[in-house]
Image (tube, rainbow, N blue to C red; front, side, top):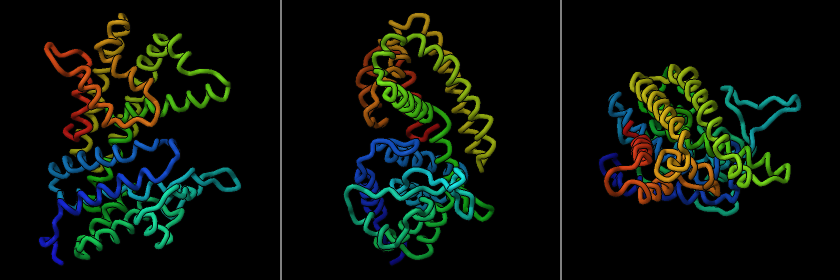
Length: 331
């Protein structure tokens, strides 16, 4: 079958549905730095941003759509990072960390394909590329296109000199989403609060009770010190390592934007009661306290219903609007 003969919208929709279904076959709420509802949202955001970067860098949109949709299709098989007898992390031939195999609680055609191909404990960029090729073959896509998508997925953790512009678009979008800007700030909140939950639980203490009693002090330290340092660290450690000018420009703008918003949040702490009603702190506090496997996509819908209707627009609506644009890959 030729590329033109394939109904790409139908194929992509089916693959997206398979991806969403697959991520819910595991019951673990947290593994490493990800929670169960994170990965599907992350993939959707990466696809949107990779397409934006692709337009700016003249990449092929169709291969980006397939590659981005499937780039983390085997990520949920990654359990905890493997360590050797010396306590050091086990790496593959490219220096990428290897994970223990985490079996799903339930099965579907993708998990059976993964087992059939014997991809256990394979870096997910490699296993995902192999699985993607097989899935695209099932949708009738021609070999040369499948090979290009496989290269794009394989490049998303470690692009090389031979990586295509589409592979670089996916690598940069994947790096930006997890590390830079408002979606990454949301992820930082989730990871930080998860760690604190574990620490409080180990002591037999109640994190929510502590947050209620120490709310303002916690927010001043977190938003006034920890997050600004984290944000500027991303500019230093990640922006210059992105592979394309459009990516570096988008990432730098995200760091700048978050810096401005953090300054606004710090000013809101002068009157936290008012800000927690319709300021940016209302959004942040929701993210801090709503910790049971949330989905940012669903959170945004609820926040828009609460804060983005009527005039004049609330201060919270500005943060929600900026977050929505980054989620959509527009910035």
